[in-house]
Amino acid sequence: MKAPDTAALLEDAANRIADVSRPDLQIMLRRAALLLRNSGSIAFEDDMEEALRDLSGEFGKTRNDTVRLIVREWMEKNTYLPVHNVDEDSEVDGTA
Image 1 (tube, helix red, strand yellow):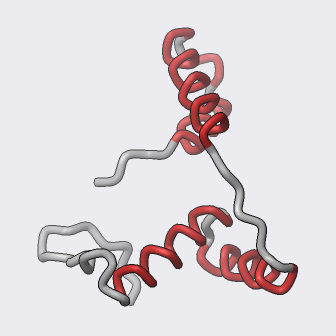
Image 2 (image 1 turned 120 degrees about the vertical axis):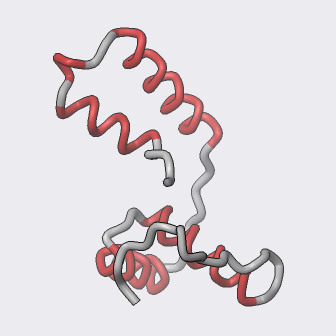
């Protein structure tokens, strides 16, 4: 099972702010600050940005998650990364 990302944890904490302990909130905010500090942005041409927005909407993912997915699939297809195999015990979302 995949661990939730920092953004998902922060959104969850925002939805139940009264229930989140101060130490947990500090940890989440420090992780978010670290990610922001180390993040880089890739700027694309307008037509590519529009296509990414459309595709992200179709996938129900963020722009960055969509870019990661595209790059990973390209790297797997071109043998820069091993293909991610799904075995019988793997969880799937039920789509083909």
